[in-house]
Length: 174
Image: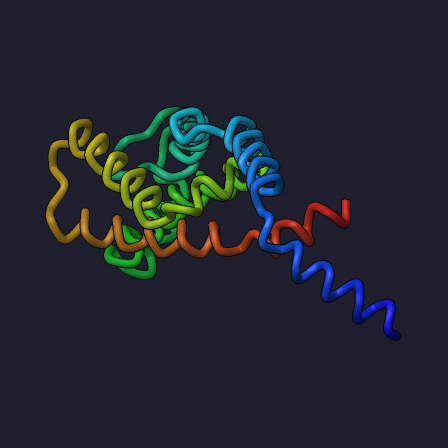
């Protein structure tokens, strides 16, 4: 018991000499920051994932009349039976949730953490850029429709990005 107390006392007295350990800690921090993913590369990857998910989403559900392939109403027919407001919100939710679910599956954990560090900015910018692209293509988006679409998109993207533990459990069983 006295040896442990003596060891602690000697450790406590040596704790004042942090010059050597400071160098080691700075070296470790430099290595970690060098290997960490860059925000710009993660943003480019998210943009690519968003383009791919948009391709598949626009095949199933036309957003503001923008449709890639096939004819007909797709999922919009089912959503409109409930109400037009629900359709606008759910179309936005479907559109952005697919993007963030795909991003969660395809990005590395460190890259996902870079996105989640600024989650509000990430989700907001993807939603508003998408709405802007649809506004340029459709030219007839009302304020109410755009607001409902953004609301649904943001809520669904937040839910999809917060569900990382659920996705981890699903894919770890496979």
